[in-house]
Image 1 (cartoon, rainbow, N blue to C red):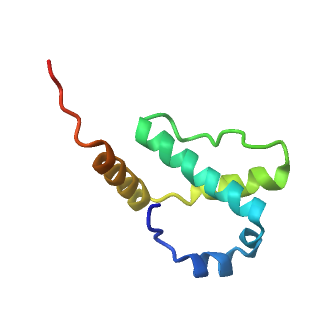
Image 2 (image 1 turned 45 degrees about the vertical axis):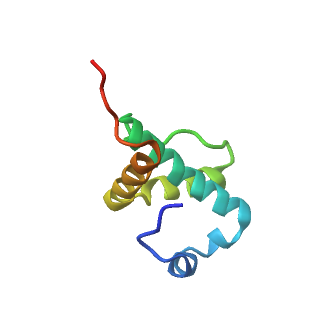
Length: 90
């Protein structure tokens, strides 16, 4: 797991809805989806549909927009260390 720029205690204090496990799951899914899209180089300007339930989609969107440049860099560095550097054999 990637260390957060905002400590979890402060995050829960600023967004009390995330204490609910399902909302927390939607928030984390939003973060993970955004990080995966950033890593694969896809467009991240539009938030994908997560749920037709308005609250779940809103929490997913909060998670999507909570990703910072530091989070992206850490995610990229972490995944590179697990896979190893890409070596072309051309």
